[in-house]
Image 1 (cartoon, rainbow, N blue to C red):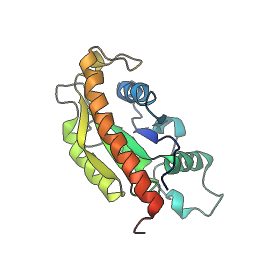
Image 2 (image 1 turned 120 degrees about the vertical axis):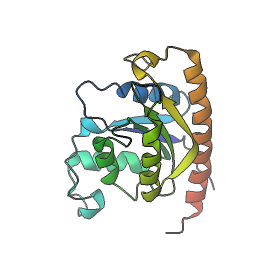
Image 3 (image 1 turned 60 degrees about the horizontal axis):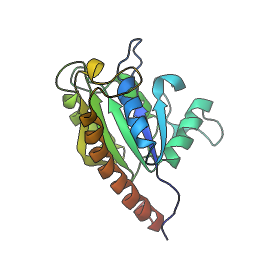
Length: 195
């Protein structure tokens, strides 16, 4: 029997820079997704995870640091994810990679949409290839659509508001696919998983 509880999508953002514009993309995604489902923005900087030493699963029950336990609870409750990544030397930011690497079982058999951004014209698409490989290794099912935000400083304002309605229209199509997969895979997980 499929659960009637609303879908929960977590947005994972991992920039630690002092003047980070990527938070605009995360806020933009949150503002649109929260109209359609439960939505949690996970800003890695706010949780102050250390550089990876021990994954969550390597701690004995009740011994993980408080911030790591909070993240585990959010990620475990999530039915899918949007990973928001800038492009650092054609790859993902180290803060995002560090956030992702602290967990594993929380992600397995759940869908993920990749959202990238840059200050230039390409919107971080070169990083998306690396992001997709990492997410697949962590057990997430990446949807085929990606959402790129070029020239983020002029495309989205400080609160994540879009300068043109076409940005919201494009995101809605991206969200349609993600939520379809989230619903389908949630039902499949409730029937059982291979491991």
